[in-house]
Length: 287
Image (tube, rainbow, N blue to C red):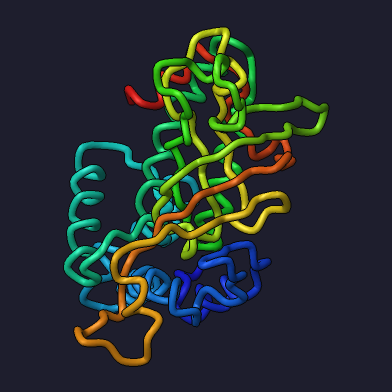
């Protein structure tokens, strides 16, 4: 499989359904809108590096599944050397962008953590979560996907567990289990790089006990899935970024944080890797 290029990445983002808002405005094209183009540029530079003779060794690797060359942020971390390469990759990104690149960071960690957790769950419950995850990873490697990771829930009253909140939607949860998938509802907040992501890996926000089993949820969704609305948060440089000129120089790169609002979103079984296995929700944090 060929390593994806900047041009292919930007074209993929342009094809996505607009579902990101800022200042009450729907952003039609995240690659050109002043509020999102800088985080997209930060991630596009990763594709540049993957196709650069001097940097490709750091930004690409070999798939343990296919033996083919892939973007490093879609790989499995198999040993301590892989962990060191993860660190070096992220440090180099900071040098190249001066910012966080969340869609080639947290999703990468999430799929590796869930690789271990799904094996444990399958062994105890006879589920096939790890096979599902492998199939998704193979596609992510083929497409060179950028994947944000979402852990932090709105939480509500932090003195109470999710099941005792006045509003159950302050935490992302399973609303309904169907034969072919699940329906999820709730909110994840301040998630980095969602505007630059093609997919979002959702993880439980904490370790839960059985009364909160509905909140023990791990799955991955396209960033533009029906029922998901993303609202970009404010930050101090908003005004200067929207102006054609400013008193201080505005960089070409940057990061955004999104509020992810899930309104009865259907997720097919093949994308679900934990569903109400509360016992293992804490392992996501531990691993």
